[in-house]
Length: 161
Image (cartoon, rainbow, N blue to C red; front, side, top):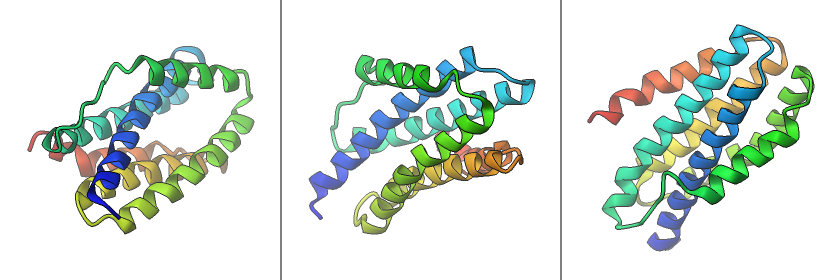
């Protein structure tokens, strides 16, 4: 795999973080069953924001431009969230598990194929796995927030280094 293709993947993943921030922010503002669901959306936003922040230095080192205010991704994220915001919790979580699963597999594959920027690819894969495992836990009635907080604890120190 060429290095340029690898960097393009990282750039696409970054855009996905901007999308995710918008997507989960829409739910945070518009879908609260309980105080714990509000906390869940906020923690998902933290995961997406942390991941985007940690991808930026890699993009900078390869002189790849990115936009943390990418209107296309922001609009797409909120528009997609609107489609599912009416769903009851069990159906929403089932939908989210099925929606995240192919991305989790793709990002894990990218991490396995990476020959450069392996730490960044591992971050991208780990963040998607955390989100996937979170929704799988929620699907069976267990709080998925713990899984997200483990990801944050693992990667937050890297933000300041």
